[in-house]
Each structure stands twice: as structure tokens, then as C-alpha cells.
Image 1 (cartoon, rainbow, N blue to C red):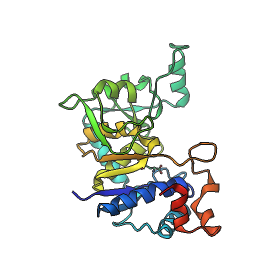
Image 2: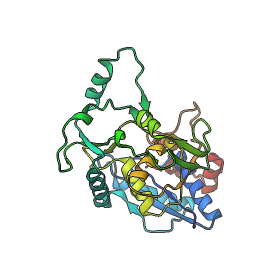
Image 3: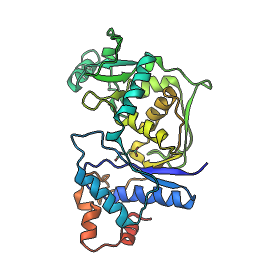
Image 4: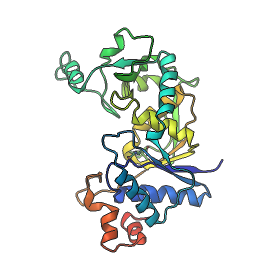
Amino acid sequence: MTFRTRFAPSPTGPLHLGHAYSAILAHDMARACHGDFILRIEDIDQSRARPEWEAQIYDDLKWLGLGWDADIRRQSDELESYEAALEQLWGKGILYGCSCNRKDIQAAMSAPQEGVEQPIGPDGIIYPRTCSVKPQPNERPRTMALRLNMDSVVIPANNQFSFEETGAGPNRETGFICFDGEYARSGLGDIVVARRDMGTSYHLSVVLDDAAQDITHVVRGQDLFDATRIHVVLQHFLDLPTPTYHHHQLIRDAEGKRLAKRDDARAIRLFRDEGASPDDIRRMVGL
Ligand code: GLU
């Protein structure tokens, strides 16, 4: 099987040194295996995505010498495929509409359990399932968020969900990573598969796109290691293959904080303007 990986930035700000590390690593792994390196623009959050940031991504990647192999996939062009997957999941009876906002969730969490620590999953506080008991319409609702009902998790035959990790999670998790249905229920919670404002979610789109683009190896930052369990559960429900995952270390600033889009000071564009070369960027990120 040809090694095929992707770089999947969101055009919501400048690419910084952390992105450079991720893109160069994925590119070099693909080239070392005579495989493919492809590009995906993750722009489902149209309130934050900007064409000028997308153009800057292409420009920075070309300048870094990272050529991509297939047509670029832009998530905002794929909304129909996300709709189709939601329809499939709705048809299986494993989604429910949720009208709770952040405040409702906080209120439901704090009222009966004062003093008890709130369970946290990859997406923050585990949803208290308030809407899961409400009667659901026959048709998939379009005006509210949709959550995956983890009570309906059908555990795979060997009683385990699993994926192969060739990099490492934040706690050095590596190798064959397993978890069971009980963990999916209590550790992940009823995850949002479609946000009200987007009609999809990062989790749903990423698993559908990785499958549609035949990705065999997902190379990305350790900050997404915990979300991978969500992706594996979704792959199970959508009958999609699970790629191999390679989570890498994060590039941090001088204070040890992870770089974010707002860290414009580390933007590749600024280093370019100051006369840095692509090799300088490689050296800066240790590649
Ligand atoms: N779009 C995500 C980001 O820019 C990356 C998602 C992924 O690699 O799965 O952080």
C-alpha cells in the first residue's frame, strides 16, 4: 500500500513554525516512503476562514519546497458529502438533536453535582446528555447541533476500538492503542458531529476526508491525539478504514507554550521577510 499522508491547515491565520514542522515532517515521511503528500484546506468554519490566508498557505508551502501530489481538497466544497454521512448516521438512529448551549451545559453540570469534578473529554466537558432523552423527529433536524448517542455504541467484535500510533501522544502513548465501548461512553461522551452553525464538525469532516483522500498515515500534532479516539469511533460507525496515526511533538515558544495562530511573531511570512531561507526554517524546528 502506498504511503499517503496529508497536511490539513485551516486558513484562519498565518502558518507559523508549528505548521512548518508538521508540514515538513509529513512531506519528508511521504518522500522517504516514495509515497504521496497531499494538501487539504480545512475551512468549514467560514466565519474565520479567509481567502488571503489560504493563498498565504500555498505561497509558504511552495517557498518551503513542499510540493503536494493531488488536487487540493477544500472542505467548504464537500458539504454535500458531510450531509450524506449525517443522513446515514441519522438513519441508523444513533444521532440526536441537541439545543443546549454552553450555559445550559454548565448549568446541568453544576446543579446536581456541586463540588464534584466535571468529567473532561477531548472536546471539553463531557455533555450531560440532557437532550438525549427528548423525543426526536423522523427527519434529521437542520437547525440544531447533532450529537452521536454513545449509548448506541456497538462495540466491535473483539470488544475493542484500536488504532496504530507510530509517533506518540502527550503521555508517550505509542504502538497499538486500544479502548473499549465503556471508555467511548464515559471518556469521550456524546460528541457533536454537526454544529448548528456549520452543518458539520471538525471530527466528522476529518474522518470523511481522510477516507475520501485514501490517507494511509495521518501525521499531525500531539494536541490531536485525544481526538483520535473520537475519529476511530466515527470510522467504525461510518464503515471507514482507520489509517495509521503519527502524532508529533509540538513546537513551543520560549515560555514553553504551544504556538497558536495568534502567534504572528512566529509566522513563516515574517521569517521570510527578515531574509530566512527554507533551510533556516528547517533548522529552527529541528528537522
Ligand atoms: N485543521 C487542523 C489544524 O489546522 C488539523 C486537523 C488534522 O490534522 O487532523 O489544526
